[in-house]
Image (cartoon, rainbow, N blue to C red; front, side, top):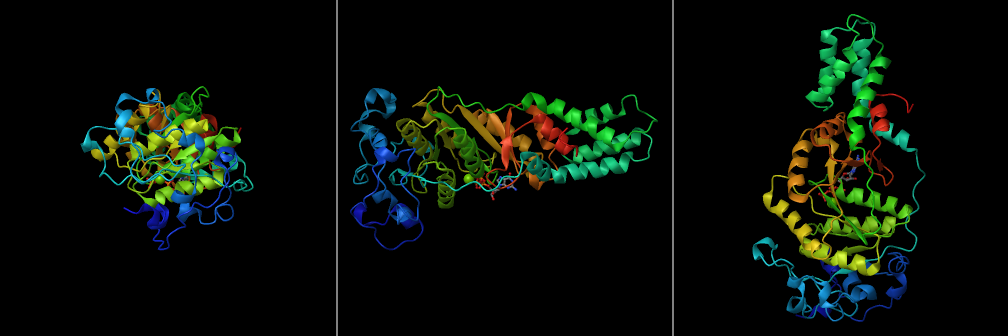
Length: 440
Ligand SMILES: Nc1nc2c(ncn2[C@@H]2O[C@H](COP(=O)(O)OP(=O)(O)OP(=O)(O)O)[C@@H](O)[C@H]2O)c(=O)[nH]1
Ligand SMILES: [Mg+2]
């Protein structure tokens, strides 16, 4: 095989015909650039960055140290030590990490043994994109929840204006709440709370909204837990999982922005190795938010990539490693097993990893979210939830139904596609916004 005559893997991916220069282009010394001083912008510092990445982009020496030549074997799990770590023939230009050894012994578990491709660490530009002018979170939250809140609010206004409270009105309120996906149990409880002591009396719509907000807050308060990054873990490993299109990759981008603003260094792992576009998408988020992205070619083993990324993040001294994964429907057993494998393999490097397993749920799927939680929970031990696309549904009550059923922490909610459209979940704000009340 004559690898040096091949275009870079991204070049191959995107159909580039030209062969990149065999001699690596000079680049900044990665020792000085990783990870805080990135190598430059795509358009300037590394002009043919994407095409030449595997040949040109030198992996930082810290990463190189992880190569079999220098890595002390005692740091490796038994099954990864020794002969398994022989470099892949002809695939390691200087400064690159060898392909991950297939960490599992059971061939059945491994995806089609795609020829191991070089590990690439994409460095972000020196000056990541300046964040756009921010609208306050409350305004984005209420804007995002408008569909749910106006559906509810209109019903409440219609039901409780100049009307005495009776069983029919309460039943209609219950229906409205069920339609907003609150779930039967919560809907009944809220309707009862509204009815308590008020039969045959009038009740103003605003009073109903206040009761609704109080009940929603009460239901959500126990699950509104911030994601705490344990800084004693280096890196703190976050695994992002969920069905196709739930918002995993976007959430990684949004979280990277937050973590970096808090002063954490972040590395990203392009663990969705199924689609070339997924790798590219994460790379773009890395560029926007200033985080290096560890990737291999499409079709590579996801678990092996996760393993290498953890090693690279360790070597780079990153505070946080976020691992993207391919979307998988909860009814596909094989894909769920792959997720288990990713976890098993990274535990060979760090028994406590992943330190957080975040299930990303798309609010627009409604009740299906319940079965997603159940199955992902079994396969991957979900530690917390992120609910996205609350802006795209009138059924934001699903969060309340999830809280009632599973009691899993809800760390963040997303109300839009922008980098700032994700915030830690606060029960009171959410409850008031969904009930159509002011911040209070
Ligand atoms: N409106 C809205 N769109 C969102 C939100 N979060 C993500 N999206 C959009 O949802 C789409 C899918 O998001 P991705 O991040 O690619 O989802 P994913 O889970 O990584 O998808 P796969 O990798 O295909 O499984 C994108 O168009 C995102 O911009 C949100 O909170 N609100
Ligand atoms: Mg994705």
